[in-house]
Length: 65
Image (cartoon, rainbow, N blue to C red; front, side, top):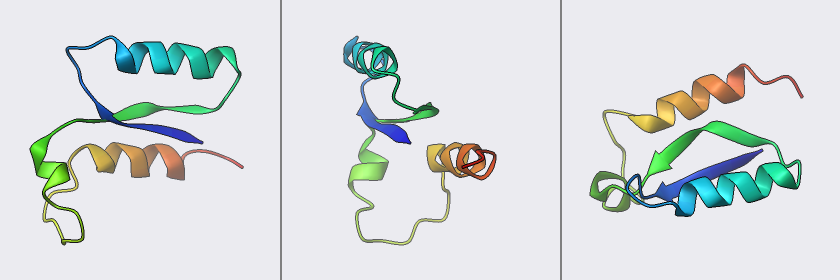
């Protein structure tokens, strides 16, 4: 599965990357992780609120392999 991270919501980069990967028939998750300072500054730290990663977890648990 492919997870798009550091996606800038005001940019076309994420949409273009998604379209290219889907054209290659790669299994792209619907959930994206936005380019936010809260995620960049939390590297290696424990966080109280999983935020967008909660959606990733829910999506992955619902995927049958």
